Length: 176
Ligand code: HEC
Image 1 (cartoon, rainbow, N blue to C red):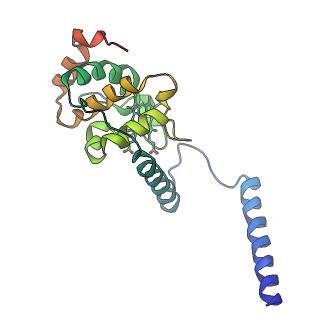
Image 2: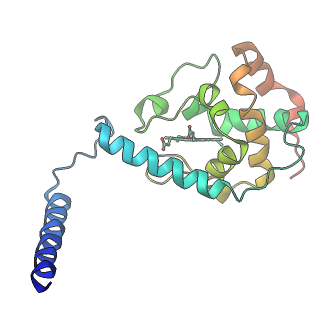
Image 3: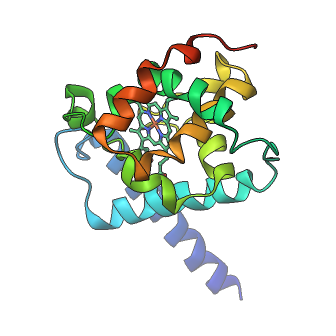
């Protein structure tokens, strides 16, 4: 028994030493211009997905999420806060969209894969070490729900509809 513990201790110390050597040697390339290996990408994406899905369960969706007022208000907010990274129908890839790693997904393609609660939680809290900001630090929940309402419309929007939505005059006023 004593021998087993001794062996396990030696293995644990060796693993710790290997980890410290890896960290301090600078061997890992953090360049955003360098793609992640498949293993690292799997690790990061799975950790992110599970973390968000788990926390988003506690989010309560407002009953008027599908109201036209929300999407009208959300359009302007999306254009000023999100478009630069996440693009939109008819919008060419920007320098931020192209340069970030992980690359901000085109929400017009990905939004339908996620629940409203997932979209809200991510928008409010952001994602560490990715460039996705926590908008809840500076914006009210009501504003963020307006944006979520609009994002849910994005997948079925044409470029012309998008432009009309973000320029609609009524969007300028909102009560929060
Ligand atoms: C500076 C760039 C940047 C801005 C501005 C930005 N995001 Fe992001 N966002 C990102 C990046 C990068 C990711 C990808 C993170 C990852 O892959 O883990 C992301 C991920 C997301 C996701 C998760 C998508 C998915 O498929 O899991 C949502 C939802 C999202 N952003 C919403 C928004 C909203 C809404 C806004 C505006 C209020 C916004 N983002 C503004 C960079 C940005």
